[in-house]
Image (tube, rainbow, N blue to C red; front, side, top):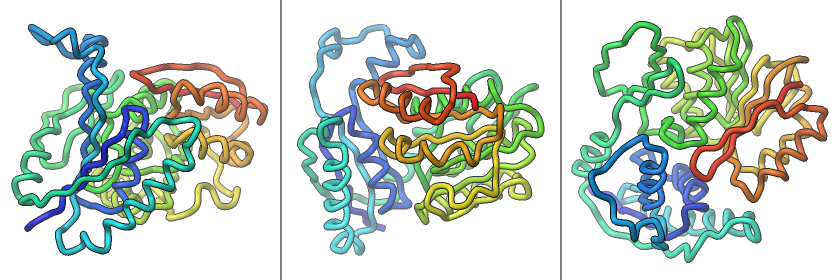
Length: 313
């Protein structure tokens, strides 16, 4: 099977937003190539090299975001991708530098790409107990580990990115046995699945993207948690009948701020709100928006260029 490889030339700051746009047009993978990720790994001591070129620390190259679309769908898909990228850039104008947003295309053999892409994923340990395991890998669980099997083909949210990783770490810190968890903008469903496996009695997952909803349902079934999971295709939180002990939203800062006034009706008194997907230039804006809802900022953490926040109601 042949694919068109779309490559979007952007910046580190804009790469995740562009990747999120591209996930709306493919079931076959999105990849970010960014030299700053190598620098961050070295600085965090999460990985070591015998030698790293010092010039990399001043590298100004673009970040590249790649997506793979079946060749026969390219003619229809290409203008839609361009339009959605331009909309995302317009929404972030003045706050985020998206770079040139040049789009290049080439035809690739799909079987080769999918095999290489799958080889990239390995079991990922996050926090004290969570291990994210691609569903095609056999993994022997160790005592105390919570295993989440994930089909990474289908939607954003593999646990590799800092925004998701921080949510999982804060979830392990704040979730209690029997809690009800709400995940707004659930993507692959990774956070809701983790909540159930960590002891939540119910997880309510919502997303506006058809592919995300399909992916979350598949991953819930694959992890044996469907009986405790509700996956809804909806615009954020419609109605106030479901109230959570823990709420999570790993979305862009602008959408988080738009959400802020509606959050209290779905968060129980004394509950925890975990927010992620926030860059430093938007941090104060998000904190102001949520403290205005009588929520108290309890914890702030940072990984790479991203921040996550935990509020109490």
